[in-house]
Amino acid sequence: MKHLRFEEFTSFETYIFDCDGVIWGICEEDTKTSVATVNYLLRLNKRVMFVTNNSNKTRAQFVQQLESKGVNFGNRSQEQKLSMMISASYTTAAFLQDSGLHRPFIITSDTGVLEECRMLGITDYFATITDDGKPAPLFQKLDMGSAADVIKQNPNVDSIVVGWDMQLTALKVGTAVNYIKWHEDLHASEPGYKEMPLIACSGDTGGVLGKTTHLGKELKLRAIGNGAMADIIARSFDPPKVWVDMGKPSDALLLLLRSPHAYNVDLNKALMVGDTLQTDIVFGNRGGMNTLLVLTGVTSQLELDEELRANGPGLRRPSYVLPKLGSFVDSGHIARGDKV
Ligand SMILES: [Mg+2]
Image: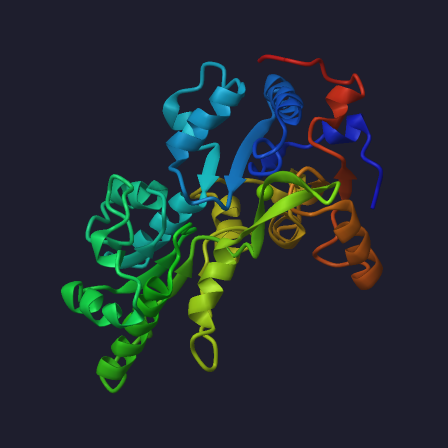
C-alpha cells in the first residue's frame, strides 16, 4: 500500500464515495471533515459520485441527506444531483425493469426500494411493508405455516427481492423459499422454464450501527447485512441458490458506471473511497479503480492488518488507507467547513 499524499489524493478525475461509514453513520466531527473534503473536491470541479449499498431510501432522499450534512451541490439541478447518486434501491428497480420483472415479492422494512420501483413503473409488487412503511398485516402472524396463505392470496409473483429488513422473520423467509420452490414444482417441466430469480439489493455480510462501551472497552455495534439476509433464503436450498447482487462489488454496477449509455466513468482515473473491504475495496479493484479505505466504518485496522498478513496482494487490498475521509482537513490541507 502506498502512502497517500494530498497532491495524489486530488489528482483523480472522478471520486466515488460510499456513504455509510464514510460520510454518515460516523461521529459528528468526522462527518463534518468528510463533508468539507467532498466540498473541496466539488470546488475543484472534480466529478463526484456517491454509491451506496443501502436500499432503505430513494436517491432523492439520499441527496437530501447529503445536503442536510452540508454537501454543497452548488447550482446543480435536481436531475444532475440524482445522476451523482447511485443507491441499491435504484439499481434494484432498474434491474427489475430491464429484466421485465414487474411483480417482485420485496422483503424490506423501509420504503426506498418500493418508491424507486414505482418511479420506474413497477407497481404490481408485493412487499412485507405497506407503501407508507407499516408492516404488512399478512406478516403479523409469526408461524411459518402462514406462508401458504400469503402465497395463495398473492400468487402472481415473478421474482424475490431481498432488501434490508429490520423485522425479518421465519415467515418472510419461508414465504420467499416457497415462492421459489412452488414455482419450480409447478412449472419446471414446461418448455422455456426459468427459475424464479433471487435478487439481493446488496451483498453486505454486515454493517455498523454505532459504538458502545462494554466491560470498559469501546466496541462497534455490528448489524446483520443485506447479503446475510439473502443468504438465509439461499441456504434454505440444497445446493444453495445463488442471488443476483445489485450493489457493490457486482459486475452489474461496474457495467453501469462504465457504460457510455449510463454513467460513462473512466474507472482508471477514478478513486473509490469506502469503509468496507468486502464491498467497496473489492468493487474498486475489480473495476480497475484506485481504492482508498477509511477506518471509520466496518473494516477496522486490526481486520485490515489480518487481511494483509493472510492474503497479501489481492482484490481486498486497498491502494491507500486513511484513518478517515477528513484526514486532509485534520492535516490542514483542506479548510474546515469548506463550501463550494
Ligand atoms: Mg459503508
